Length: 350
Image (cartoon, rainbow, N blue to C red; front, side):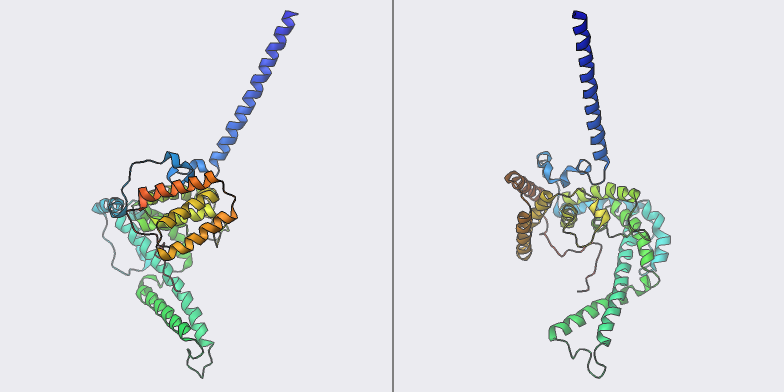
C-alpha cells in the first residue's frame, strides 16, 4: 500500500514538472517571438519610451548650442582625412560617382555635400512639376485677358509668390540637377542620407528618421531594409532627443500615433509600436516648448487625444511626468518648438 502511494506521488510530481516546463517554455518562446517582431517596445531605447520615466537619468545632459557643437565634432574630425570636394553645382550624377566611396567611409564633408545636393535636386524635380501645374492654371485663363484678371488680390499675390519660389529653385539648381530624375534620386537617397547622418549631420539624421524613401519598383520595403532602418533610426532619434531636436520629437510622435499619419509610411511605422499614451506624452512635450500660436493648435490636439481615448488618471500622470522631465532635461535651454521646421531641406511651394 505504501509503495503504491509512493509511486502515485512520484507520477504526480513528474506530471507537475512536465506541465511547468511546458508553460515556461511556451512563455519564453512567446517572449522571444515578441521581442523579434519589428516595432516592439523591448527594442526601443528608454529615452524614446514615455512608459520608462522611472528609468530616466536625473543628470542633466548637454543640450542647446553646446549640444550642436558636440554633435558636429565627429564630422569635424572626419574632415582631417577628407578628399577635396568638387566645384559647386557639379552635376549630381558626377558628384555621386566621385564622392560615394568617401561618403560611405565616413568622410563628413563629402557625406553632407552628397546629402544636401541630393535634397536640392529633389526640390528641383518638385519645382519642375509645380511649374507645369502653375503654367497650366495660367493658360486656362481666357487668352484675351491678363492671366491674373480673374484672380482675387490675395490669389494673385500667392500665385506670383509661388512662381517666384519655383523660378528661384529651378534657376539655382539647373546645372546640378538637370540630368537627374526621380528614379535616380530614389536609388541614392537612402544611402546618402544614412551616410551623412552617421557622420553627425543633424539635418540628415532627422531626414533619415522621417523616412522619405520609396521602395522603388516594389510595393513595400523588404524586411532587411526595415531592420536596417530601425537599427539606425532608433539611435538617431534617441541622440536627437538628447540634443533637444524638436524634429525628432515630431517624427517619433507620428510613429506612435499611426492613425494621425496622412500617408502610410511603412518605415516610420516600424520605428515604435502604436501607443496613444505615448503619442499624448510627446504632444505634451511639444506643448511645453511651443510659442503662442503653436500652443493653441497643440491644446486642441491634446483635447482631441483625450476625447478619443479612455486614459486612466495614472496614464495621464505618467505622460505628464515624462514630458516635464524630458523638457527640463533636454529642451528647456534650447530653441522653442517650431511646427514648421523643415526636414530633409524641404522647400515649401505654398
